[in-house]
Length: 358
Image (cartoon, rainbow, N blue to C red; front, top):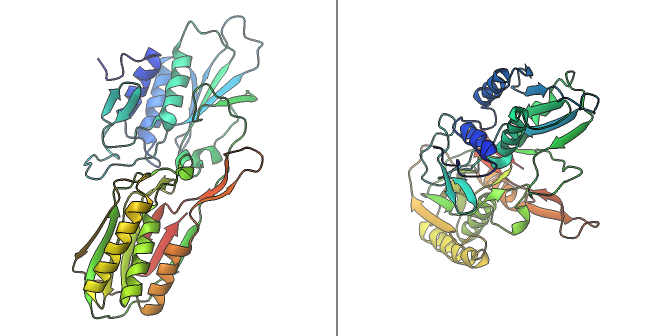
C-alpha cells in the first residue's frame, strides 16, 4: 500500500506517487520521459518522444465524440529540486520520501514536485479511464519548464490537432486562469582581479531562511540570502578594511535562496565580527515574522585563494547590494497582483569571475 493510497482521486495520487519514485529535476528528465512513454504504450496509445524528452500521448475520441474538437491537456514533467539544510538525499538519483499530514501532502526534507507532477498524474489518469467520455485527447508533457520552458520551445506540434489547450499548472484548485506570466533570466558577470592582502580570513554565512518559489511567493516579503549576505559584507567593510575572496548562494533561478556564504579577509577581525553581530540582530528583528529561523555565523577559516583587490571588492559589494530584488511593480489593473518582480536566485564565484543570476 502506498503512502498516498487513501487519497482521492485515488488513481491520480497512485500515478503521482509512482512519479515521485523517479528523479525528475530539470535537465534530469530522461527517466521520467521514458516512464510516460511506457505508460502510453501499455494503453496502446499513439505516442511521440523527442530528443528534449518531451512526450505526446494521444487517445482517440470515445464513441459519440468523434466529431468533437480535440482537446490538449498540457503539463511539465520536471520539478524544482531543493533540499532542507542537512538533508542527505541525492535528488538526481533518489526518489522522494512522501508523507501525508492531514490535508498536506509533502516530501521529507525536499520539495515535492507537485508543480507540475500533479498535472502529469491527472492527464495520465484521464487517458487511462475507460469510463470517461471525451473527444480526441492530446496529452503534451514538456520538459525543463522550471528553467525557461526549454522543452516547449523545441516541441514539434505536428501531431496535434487540438486548438483548445488546458495547461494544468496553476496555483489554486477550482480556478481557471486565462493568460500567462512572461519571464527572462539575466546573468550578471563581474570579472575578478585578485591580489595579496594581509589580515584574518573569515567565513560569513546566512542561513535558516524560509525561501520559496519566486514566481509565487516573491510578494510575501521573505528574505533573500544573497541580498542579506551583501548587507552583512557592506556593514563589515564599513567597520574595517575588507577584501572579498568568494561568495555563493542559491542554486535555482526561481527559488528564493535560503542560505549564502562568503569568505573575506579583513584587517581587523574583531571589528568585522562586531559589525556582523550588530547587523545580524537588526536583520532578525526585520525578518522576525517572515524568517524566524534567520541565522548569521562568522568564523575564522583558512583559504588558499587570493582575495579580490580593493576595486573589485567594491564592485562585488555594489553588485550584491544594488541589484534589484523582489517586487518591482504592482498591477494597475488587478488589485494585489504583482506585475514585475526579480529574484537574485544564484550567486557563484570562480577564480576569474563572479556571477549573479536573476
